[in-house]
Length: 548
Ligand SMILES: Cc1cc2nc3c(=O)[nH]c(=O)nc-3n(C[C@H](O)[C@H](O)[C@H](O)COP(=O)(O)OP(=O)(O)OC[C@H]3O[C@@H](n4cnc5c(N)ncnc54)[C@H](O)[C@@H]3O)c2cc1C
Image 1 (cartoon, rainbow, N blue to C red):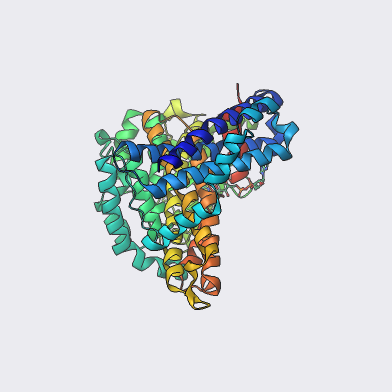
Image 2: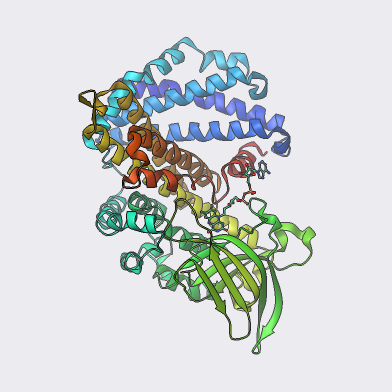
């Protein structure tokens, strides 16, 4: 164990030194981030490499914390060294191929990643035998995720969420997916009773005030049972909660947060439009001042797209243009809480007594079923003035508040993705132990062990990157870099792990009756929403890393 810890201690400082040098050079290349669009390809490379380096650091810190706490674990140490080695080899290879773009001086490389010592350690740390050893352990334990967690609250949260998710959600997950059903009220009611909708709501507003780490751990467990019918139910209240805490008036916080925390109000988030996705500042849905029945308010007109859970939701957090001057861009947008009636099914129409109409139709999707994602049309839909978040002060601040909410959503997606990858790893480890070919369980073959070892290692890195981001967000709610990094990396890990798992299942991985086929189609949505992968890399991660 000590040897592997030493390997990590040799690799990580070298990796950090090279990454810092590459970022420094990237800042010069992009004029402090102002010219990212002239160097998009390299900026994306830097964003991804920096994310992987952070993941390697997070996994190494976790392995060290286990040793410090007197709970050392050889597999975790092997994973930390193997992952650091893999990231180091990848970065060194990328620099070799794109030498001029990276601009890392030869002498920096020579005394770090290219030195004889570090190169030797990197070779040893990620040798296939290491991954095979990890893979054997994964098969033996059926990938059980019982790793040490720092903190009693987090551990209790994991145990109770796991018991609930496996007993109440998992048995329904397959049926909901195959029939494209709406998540049943029984799941919502049980999550309500467990207080899962108010985990990040401060106690003074009726929530649990648990902090971000238990919230992530609960999300993971729920997502292991079902991404859409459990883990993702928490995302929407999380986003609205963070936006309200940041920009709501005291009266708005007191009015909206308690019922959101109690799970009395289901929430939808409506930002995307049919013609406006990544370029959020160009949102066109209009909100115009008006009056109805003597009450001042806003009339909403326009179309929205991909609003998940909009049918069942009681309120939508809606981003709309309140300033008709299109040149105002992001500064012309405001965030509203739009009440509506809940509807089951894939299509609904809501008529207000004053004539306003909201029509919704779900777009069919191969996965992520259970909440339905709707295209919406608003026609003179009336919203009271008190529902603009921040009221008069909030006018023009919707973009900023929405981004604050998205940071929380992205953190939570790190948990969703880790939970989904965990589900895929568990069913694959079990399958590899049971399926026999050529007279032996397929898990006895080197390549299966190696693949499972790498899958488990990448998942461990994604999980620890997410936990590290959660802890940072507890200290500073305004951060957005780390939540974006964990969303980026964990989503890719979920896509890759589910697909590797499907291959290990062979033809049965393509059969609907095997859960892995559901996990594959569920995972592919993760890099798309809350900032599609290229946008997250360029506009959030690269921009922050290269600015200044
Ligand atoms: C199942 C599902 C559920 C969703 N739920 C919600 C929800 O609840 N609420 C909500 O508001 N939205 C939701 N979304 C929408 C989601 O957030 C958007 O799809 C996403 O932000 C991308 O927007 P877009 O689809 O318009 O893609 P576009 O913005 O058109 O981007 C498409 C591609 O173009 C390229 N591209 C675009 N701009 C650039 C650039 N500047 N530089 C380089 N490349 C670029 C990238 O490759 C990008 O992947 C959901 C989507 C799905 C599929």
